[in-house]
Length: 337
Ligand code: CP3
Image (cartoon, rainbow, N blue to C red; front, side, top):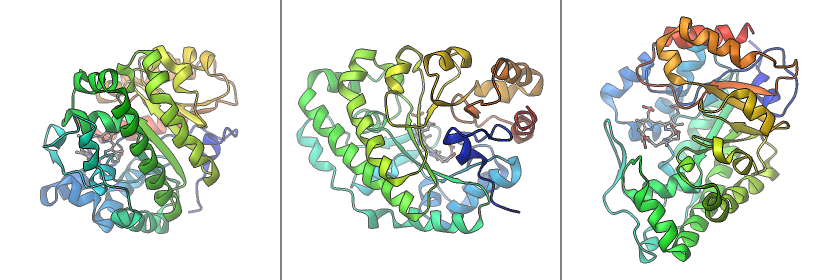
């Protein structure tokens, strides 16, 4: 089999023979091989063991026939490399016993050094030997990373994060600057090892008012994308709940903008006529199955020109409740469009 570069070509805005598909959180979650491995190893151990992590990244390529692989890692590997003690708690997510609350707490974040994530470089090299589709590396955007560091656990209110940002602007700026510097180096390690595209996940940024986003967050994210420019790889920017700030969110040097399901694809296209758009099927539609997802996919493709400028994905990660067969059928359905 020869190398399938459809994803990379679409990400650069070229016309492709068909619309490429991959899924956020396609590695892990519901797949049988991953579930088997999880009986023996916790998530962090899997991400830190190159041959196992590579195995998890490969599983959806063979099983689902998606057009890109994503590195099996987690956004919290960067703060771990910076000396923060992170636990991944089952059914909860990342937990930090001593979160960042003050400017003095910033001293807990040590400078990032590439050897600390040598395991990721090794995983990437193993994957590049085996893969016939492009490999996507990733990191969190500084806002989403800061939210875990400040809250100490997943939240849906972001009370501490926003208070920190509003009440301690100087400390916030320092934290964002530190995270931005580290993220740039962390992504450079991934690309040097062989990652062929980079996605920045700002999963929780949609909780902010647009003006706060512009003032306190966007300049840092912009700096990351600008720094990646010299690496000559497609850059993807994803967030959820970004409909009300989409033109600001897209105001970065990224080739591809990822959308969640809350915004109509056509509305996003009107706002961002020159960007490649990635998304944006509601993940629950895949849990429900073909009868539910097919008309929604049809709707998304309605009115698209030959130059679709589109990478198909869900509006957020694959839900653990998803049937693999539904994912397989969805890939086939989109490829047939
Ligand atoms: O979903 C997103 O918004 C993407 C960004 C993101 C990742 N990790 C990337 C990731 C976020 C916000 C996290 C934090 C995190 N880490 C959570 C979410 C907690 C919350 O606030 O809701 C959780 C549960 C973890 C721990 C974790 N990371 C697990 C249990 C796994 C294994 C697979 C799974 O999702 O159950 C991971 C792997 C992981 N995190 C990947 C990515 C892109 C691996 C690649 C992939 O699955 O595609």
